[in-house]
Image (cartoon, rainbow, N blue to C red; front, side):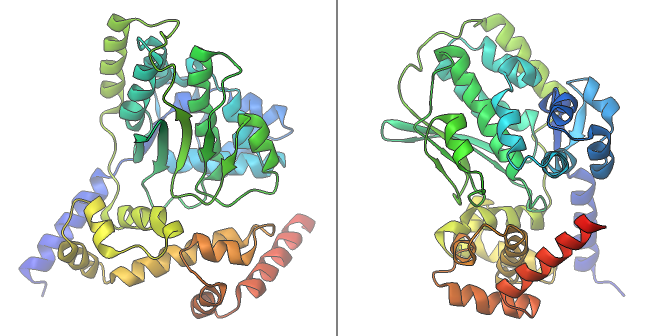
Length: 361
């Protein structure tokens, strides 16, 4: 017979499951059909594979599931054979195409206000997301990351979002504006030189978060279509249409926080607990309610990311190990053998054989 505590915990989990929300407004997919087709792909095939209802793409204020949207971009890269699909889709994505959040940026009085509004309001446009404006001396970083640990493969989304952000600066300062740096959380792609050409700036991969890094200059420059009255109306409408910034289940949020800290080494439980606004012992107790320890969660995140990255043959095994917080590749190899029963190299070879078999089918 269930105890009172177990019944309370069961109700809490059911409530969390009902309230979880991770939508993105359909404006984020503006023109995606034509871009897929223009790159030689079949848009209908992409939409079908990821479960996106194309009818919802016609209204920029309708909501799409964030996981399906991110999956659509990954699927489009595979379908078109353009590994940098998200990079170039984002480069052509002007603020006016981005629906309410783009209009908010355009209606802001100055560039600085536009960037600040992006950082503050982007999670309404795309739920289960963190955007921050962080100062580092005379440099600023407009940071972006998905909080939901369930969304593993998200490189295309990260690169297209960095392009969208950069285009807000270009709208105000001209097409020749360039950031100081661009940061991406995923491993360096095979065609990484295209990224430096697209942004005309150094691009660093395997970072803790995605970010556009820029100097604290020209932020008082007026936005060409700035309109405070319109800005207020747009902000209110965005908040109303979105209905909130979303909610991610407890375990998936823990995994997201662990993931973001792995490039700096094994994340301390205290640091993750603080990010979640919890005491360490509360975090550990709630994980125990799920039948997990904190080290179990770290192991799961590392294993899932390792398998994802090893499917990319151009990424060195040592690089993957360092991105997952291992100081020695031997430690990563031992951990991977414990998870999968084979070495990272053997797993990569099996993935390559499976991929060739699928392509030949």
